[in-house]
Amino acid sequence: MSVWDEIGEAAAGLHRQAFVFDAHADTLTEMTDRGYDLDAGPAGSQLDLPRCAGGVLDAQVFTCFVNPKCLPQGADRVRAQLATMDRQLARLPGRVALCTRPGDLGRARQAGRLGAVLAIEGGHAIENDLGILSEFVRRGVRTMTLTWNNSNEWADGCGDAGRHGGLSARGREVVAAMEAHGMVLDVSHVAESTFEGVLEVARTPLLASHSCARALREHPRNLHDDQLRAIAASGGVACVNFYPTFLVAEGQATLDHLLDHFDRFLAVAGEDHVGLGSDFDGIPITPRGVEDVAALPRVTAGLLARGHSPEAVTKVLGSNLLRLFDAAPVERSLPAQGRPGGRADVTNAHARRPREGSPA
Ligand SMILES: [Zn+2]
Image (cartoon, rainbow, N blue to C red):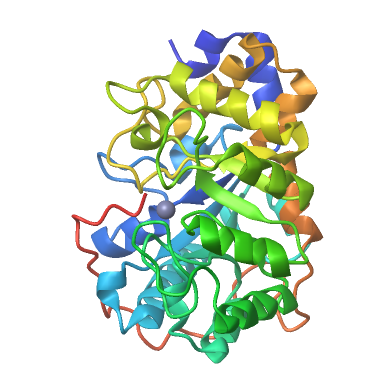
């Protein structure tokens, strides 16, 4: 029985009609490291074009993950991943579309293409150079997590003791530069002190692309209720991560555990401020029943079964994220939908990410 048959007509119809948009997958990083293309995900991969087809997924934020072990060559690591996306856009022009401007995502869906939004995971990737940030924006990058787990030269991450007590003066400059570029600020992975610092200076809606509810699972990668409320107050979107380690303290995570975190996000942040942040291809294990992107319709059915309205579920599935990205102004120098200008001058440097460092 297919997932569609299993969930029933009402849930299937709603899922197919909704704009389904996920805020975080590490597929581009995996493709770069393992040398495959988006139409042919190998065994063990969690997202590819065949599994997104048929209305399963309309758009995806594709993250360029930069393991801090790659430093000081963080920018080259991003360039290698942008080159991977360039190759997909050239190989599969009718099936995937780079989305940089307001309206691009809707047009991609109408044309039957997977909308691709580019992101960077780990602010250290810009090597403390606002010129490199500008370069990435010109290549189509629309959002960046200010840190990964590590603290960088201007912001503290959630995975170490910190170096600045949050966001440094330089970090405030980076935030201002990102906003001036029309980038979406992503606060997943940052330390609580950095989150506070961002709240003080940010003027644009915040994104938490892939985190879970700390009230349900005490983990530094998860968001406290007051952080969820702050993201909502900014007009932003908090997206639930599917990684079992962030869902449960022990034991096998299931679809029900994942739905518990959606319930918490919805209760605290409200239906206008919650989204999907699967972290597919960045998580070595998944909840039972949600093994890959093809299982997304089960999340829709589960949310409906828990009493969330079709309107609320539609927002969670993607219209909240669509609002966030379509509202963010973009620079006039950006290319229109399609292939970005400029070629990466480095394609293979640091192509190997150490396997022990899961980007989750
Ligand atoms: Zn991550």
